[in-house]
Length: 133
Image 1 (cartoon, rainbow, N blue to C red):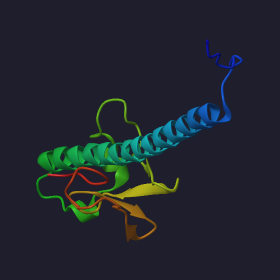
Image 2: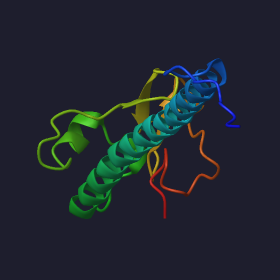
Image 3: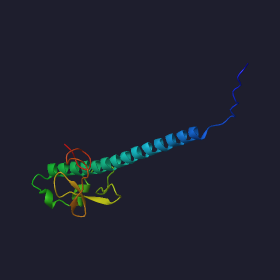
Image 4: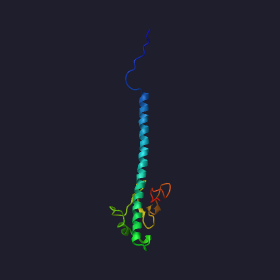
């Protein structure tokens, strides 16, 4: 006597669909967190690049004017020493979208938000949000 198994209709079960949806949602969340981290890192590197440009301009200016005090140097005096293509003193965008300015009256320069030093990275010499070492 033959045993007959019931014929299963084509398609997916509710459990299979739920597993696939959970996998898709999990992968989407993981990619979202990764993209956010890359965007924050990019903002930090852009801030560091702006600081490095100003730092180079400060060093070049002081090489041409060895008796000058960095606290007395103005932005217009440094602009001529910025890298090629930079016509104005650079700014940066903070992690929350705020506009940061550069305090060029100290050497090395630093990013400030209002009058507060801005460096949300772990150290003040890692090359993110600062000139680095």
